[in-house]
Amino acid sequence: MTDKRSALVTGVTGQDGAYLAELLLGKGYAVHGIARDITAFDCSRLGNAQCDAGEFRLYSCDITDEAGMRELVTAIRPDEIYNLAAQSHVPTSLAEPHRTMEINAAAAVNLLRMIVDLGFQGHTRVFQASSSEVFGEASGAALTESSPMRPCNPYAESKYRAYVASTGLRAEAGLFVANGFLFNHESPYRSPAFVTRKISLAVASRARGGGAPLRLG
Image (cartoon, rainbow, N blue to C red; front, side, top):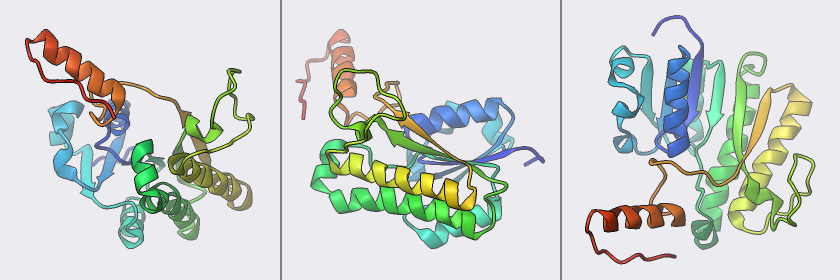
């Protein structure tokens, strides 16, 4: 890789990670992607020429593996980290609350503290993917960063805990960390586990003459 700005993207095999990696490569970044299952990633999404040129590197690492993450962050010393790795399915969070907390809260907090422990807080900037779910049941009024946070499921609570930790480290250690409150968003890369993707895939199947039943839930 050439001497250019570097970005570390966790959860790079998801819809947001894939689009972000493509965007950063287009801006001339060297991109390092992390995922548990790297076989799920199709490099053609990014443009094979950029992959072949070595501007994109993919690493197999679970974000909950603190030692593995520390090794990667130390070796890469990225200018920017985009923490998109998450268990983002609310029904799954209800069935597996402890695992959801481990991935979304504990691992995120460990990553942020790791940057400070390594002394990278003056160099590395962090984007932490949060969620509109932290605000709970909306009253109908427009939401802002100052809106009350009332998480009402394990997924929302996990994102809330990561948010609180990140704002604390920003104040205490001078870490540059920005939280993005993500609302539902769609793309061809979205997981078929989500209801909107189930519907769109079923409609596409019917349009092609398929007759598979649509099952929600």
